[in-house]
Image 1 (cartoon, rainbow, N blue to C red):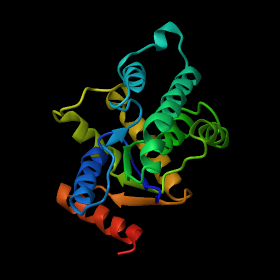
Image 2 (image 1 turned 90 degrees about the vertical axis):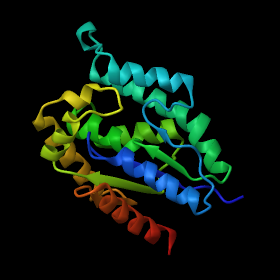
Image 3 (image 1 turned 180 degrees about the vertical axis):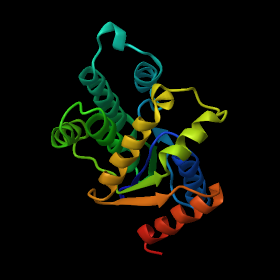
Image 4 (image 1 turned 135 degrees about the vertical axis):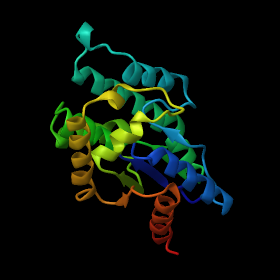
Length: 215
C-alpha cells in the first residue's frame, strides 16, 4: 500500500490558514483522494489526551503559578508524540492523506524564534525524537501582515479566544518574521500570499497543490 501524504498549514494568528486547509481538504476529497479527517495541533479532537493538552496550553494561564516556557514546550511535545503515534502515522500508513492545522513549524517559530525557549537546532532534535522522524511532505505558510492579522482577530469568530490571539502587535510582527525566516530555509515549504478574498487565496493554494501533485 502506498503511504499517504502529510500536509500541514502554518501561519500567524488570524492568517486564515484554518479556512484554507478546510477548503483544500474538501477539494481533494471531492476529487477522490483518500483523506483522513482534518486534525490539528495542539489538541486533535480525535484523541482525549490531546484535547486536554490543548485546553491547558491555549486556554489556561498557568504562568502566575510558575510554569515556565520550557515546561510548556514539554507539553507541546507530549501532545505531538501522542498525536503522531495514535492518529497521523496510522492514517498515513493506511494510505490516507493527512492535513493538519499546525505542526512542527509552529513549534520552531513560537518556541525558538519568538519565545527563545531553546535554540532552533535543539528544538529540531527534540522534535525528531518525539515524532520518530516524521516530517510533513508539504507545508503551506499562509502569510499576512501583522496589522491585517490583528484586524481579523478583532472580528467575531466561531473559535475560543486563545492566549496568543490577544498579544500586542510586536508579538504578531515577530511571529510573522519567524514564519518567513523558516519558509526560506525549510524544505517543502510554500509561502502563500494570504491577502485578498478567501477565493483568491484558495486559488493560490490550489495552484501550488497541483504542482505538488505533478499536475
